[in-house]
Every structure is written in structure tokens, then in C-alpha cells.
Length: 190
Image (cartoon, rainbow, N blue to C red; front, side, top):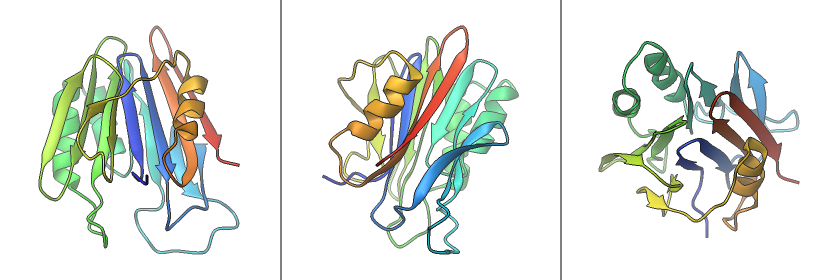
């Protein structure tokens, strides 16, 4: 099944995976203190504004993960002291779903050590939930938060685990743990 890009997040742990039929030649790199999804050197040139973006940013006490340019303003609001829920709602609502051929939803999470908020803005809805267990939300098919049974404890396990899930067209993934410190890892599909 193809569910597109997705976030899995719960208290203390999160993952983001790029799955793509249209733009598979992408990678995650560290850039400007964040993780960014960018084209690989052999990718065809594109002027699509949704191909490159920050997918993970650290704040003082949380990590923000998501599938687009909304990650930056959400992280900035969290750093300014906004409650995580308000920052996520604001970022998703202001930037709205992507105005592409598929009306691609924007997904995101603010992962804290004790509390995590996940959300999605679709053409027809804005859903934001506080979660106490790992929760999946994706751009297609699973476009409302739902719990998922995973057993990851490190950022590397989250990145590898997300990349290895049975959903179609894996490209790359990032994982994060939030506790006394924030740890991030990222991996590329073979």
C-alpha cells in the first residue's frame, strides 16, 4: 500500500519517512541545524516547491518533524514559548495543504520527552491530537492519526524502522529521540 510521506510519533520518539512515486531521487542531509529533504545529485531538475524542505528541527525541549515548509515556523513558535499544540495548529493552518495536483496534506508532530502532539491539515480538515503512544499519520490513505505498534528506543531504530515498514516506495527516513538530550539519525533506502 502506498501512503506517501508519513510521521510516526509518541512521547520521546519520532520518525519521518519520505515515500515517493514522483520524486524518488531525494535524500536527507544536515543543513542549517536541521535535517532537510533535498534532491540527490543525480535527480532530474525540478521547479516543484514541495521537493526540498526541512523535515526535522530541534527546539530547546522538543523536536518538530513534518513533510514541508511548515516545520520551520512550528519550531520557531515552540522556541518562542508557544504551547506545542498551538504551534502545530498555527503552522498547519497558516500554510494549509499543498496546492499540488493531489492536494497533498501537510503532516507534523512536536515530539517532547513527556508529551507529543501530531497533526494533519487536509483539504477537508485540520486534525491535531495529543498522543500517549506511537501514532502514525500519512499524506495518503492513513490521513488521520492512528496508533501503530512499534518498539523503537533509539533515533537510529526509529529511522531504520520507519524506512523498513512495508509501505511502498521508501526513499529515506529520519528518527529522533527526545529526553535529557535530543538525538537524530537519518538513513537512505538502498
